[in-house]
Length: 437
Image 1 (tube, rainbow, N blue to C red):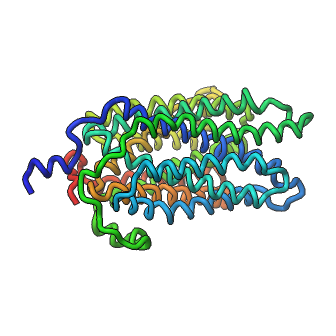
Image 2: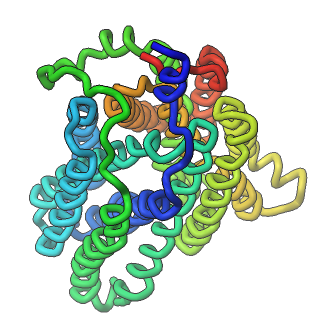
Image 3: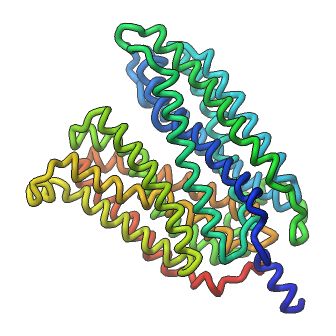
């Protein structure tokens, strides 16, 4: 194999056309609406408060069943879908299926009424699994769109613009659709939540259209891998032996991403239970972090072009360590500065927000840099697996909070980031990394 051929295998000679990169980034804007409204902020709270009967002994546990169940399903299916991609199955067809399933089943939430607990859980199992698969499939396009030098810029642009989707969908649902008073207009309030699910489904499909129109379905730059049985994709030992450096990164990613996921999943509980912040305060935190996350993802993506993904990740982990340390000492900082804990937390939230998008965008570009060219699909499928493992690891924060306190449990989050940084040091300089198998 000549050196020229090797160079072509290692990456593209130039970026894809701007319109195609725009189309790819639009999918981030589209799918962010689902996870923001359905999983994180609106429907999750509505499900626990109104779908689950008031006299039920279990409340949050039902939602946990849906989230944990869909996470486990995605962990099994992600590497299988990744193997299909490596074997030559069209990425656009797979992405279209995941989008159609997620959007159509989200529409079915319109018919979920108070008391229909298991009907709602079944729908969330399907929609959230499809969403997570779509995220991995969409990310697998990255090595086909950007050169190695610009992969961080393109990944950061997509992830950063995705936060616009979260903001727009939140305004659409909370300002334009859900307007009834839950105390005096309960029936209307429930109906508006049901219609909101239809609106989010339509939004998802409409905003994703540019992706399917503008992103090309390219022929693979290398020969597809031989067709193998689906269960071969779940043999992680064999996968690790074929891409050892990628797996070194995945172990680092698992721990520092667990720290990020802990903050995302437990920030509402921490701020209301530990700091006594109101619902209005939480909305302010959400809006602030959406914009700071967009700024961080795009800015660090540009910086990655000059210093490399590995150095950017170390810098962002440093930001997270400062932010979590600030949360741990927030009462001491308030006493020393004379500021309220609320105002100090808002500053910390802005700082942490810059790291939310950037750490995920840089991680995604790192997968594209380290993956062997004929195994891009499998690499991003495994990235999805470790992303979900990080979510499960993050759940240990709740156990630590009950055993000790929420404030002391922040030391666990600090530990996640420290371990992640130590393991990241084992990943070699990516400027010398080869995309050869």
